[in-house]
Image (cartoon, helix red, strand yellow):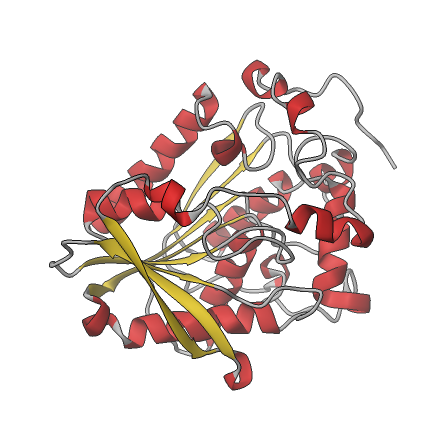
Length: 320
């Protein structure tokens, strides 16, 4: 295996951060290290709200096969108008994180667009392998769409949003909505999505032992999700959306990735497959960026450019 250990083509601002991240980001993660990474602290929902007039409300709803799961509704305290709805799926490789991980964009969108967001506590692998995570997400999406009037958003402007493992689950949930004639979606926003279990692309092989999420961690997580099926022909496109033979009929899609990360090539291939099927996709590959750079280094120039592109796409989508 080709292992990159030095001379990574990283943006200088991002490269300077990597030494301080050692041990705090899942590089070289094996199954015995999962508990360590699950226990690392992340900003709380209160910290992310930061005193703004935004609130959240928890609801217990039926997930896959009727099991109880929790969703949280995030909205402005003075919410009145039927603005857009954002369905959020958190990252963490489908094995870590919780529904409040990196929800700060939802808070921003509540303030900017008076958006109502729902973030789902899907059950994670390995305790709950596929199809539980994606089916929990689909159940929560159906619940959100079915309660549009009660929650106060316009169901014609419902967007699915996820990053990393949540980006893969967002893409899988969107495929389920298409194939089951479920909730109509106006867009899907996928940041650095985890969508291919096979690990056969150049970028999936190239970045191991370095960065923020590497080949070893990726294969570990996919094995937790799929077990012995990982990498075989017996993998559903709802688990690994890069497996989908047909990406036609999808809503407008935003997809991005860092140029220096495992998920780069699968993100490019996914956008290309949407175009090939006659669909609409906007693709950005951020030069010099590692996985999740927009959350880890929000003050960097490349992160600011990334967020600006994301916000521009969303604003254009919602103005239709």
